Image (cartoon, rainbow, N blue to C red):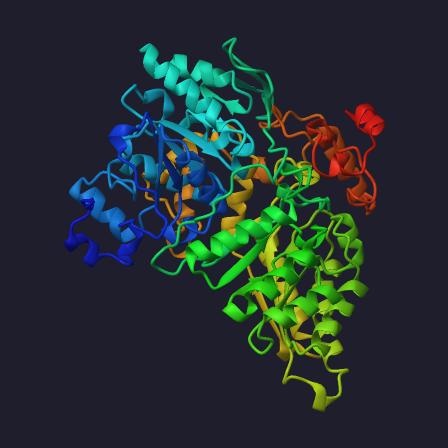
Length: 629
């Protein structure tokens, strides 16, 4: 029987002790003394969020398929346990073995959201691992970062030994095999990092240096050892139906954010929304085969006992075999009490037919993401959605029995005017008006429209990476303006307006496009008590302001200026396939409100063809593929 790292007294004194005891259904058990490599997978946020992350489930399963590797997990302790661990000098531990993280060979940290950066330092600190990579010895684990935020790793470069640039199914085992060789050699820590640098997709920050111009912009960025490549190329899984995917995912004993089976039906997106980083990073779109998905769905539902399955994708409607998959799931599982969740679905006749079969209409709401309130702005961001599409979809839904609609928009988009912002209120009202054109005796009660806005953050590897970001003062002014316009609408009582915190978005923007000088700011903020910054009740804005001031850095430099076309970005050494030239062209198209067709309508020459997979080759003849290769 496992000995728990925390005493019963401590577990009974903290909120949700099940966060720390492991032992979940389908948890992998191995003898740590009989493996060559111990790898701890970390999500730097609370257990309920980390357990909902599909990427960790995939890698956990993939690593543990190998007899020589034992992959375990750790999440950020909540603030109550954090306090106790510091007071009683208890080292942070993995859930499976309950052993200290410091005893592991690797600590792999998923970088999903910029506002978790101080939680990374919390994890290292509680694990008694030196916060700075340069201070670590052979007795410390190698700290690896991966995930969407690793595509601009510079603001946290000092804290990591390695960044894995790309999809985890590709070259992780090459890295593990190189580690086993190094371990036998007896060489020092730097020698392993030099070996790692020669594996495609591996970025070793300490092997590079940055130089800055007098105005603070990046002058040059270059490797300082011969083993480190000048450009790090994103690694892409070419065939999504011949790769790793868990058949027995972990099932927690407490309710988590995504309490269901998650079936990734495809990776990538064809749409080309200019604000969307994921749509650029994960190109080209690569679907999984229908047969693969049916087998995995059946296996996961059987192994977990979950009563819901979610079809995961950036744009589910673009999965060509979606009707066959969904109707198969309905036929197979509806009578067994399994609900089917379809996020990222365009509202059309098929979607409404499916949702009427799989949802309780009286309880559910439909979600639309117009992102902008006017057609001009939707063209600017290349959303590919007309007002007619939105109103027709809403009306079809109302006639089908729905009476609740959620609408998602962004404030602060490049080129936005106050007319565009007012358009959000007007569109919300138009949807409500559509409902009231239905005869009263055919309506399902009153209509409810929930309109939510977030603050637009320009991200690396998007066409808007050159754009300035609204200040928090501008964002607050726009929120107040929109709230006033909502109150002017005929159906104002049917519209509820929610908005995102501007202070947090400001910092997110700084970290998204920042450089190496931010490492000191993040370290100081953490040492002053900042962590769980994504949680409003623990966000200490004043501490952050002081950290910037103490280090002579200005947030406005990172988010408040239009960046010139030829500026060298901190992330330009990473090659994601999609070229900077293409993104600049798309930025210029946005200034003209010019729409670019999706990948299946016409190839826009983004550069992702270099990977020779997915949508880039699905309709090509042999000669076409050779010509474009």
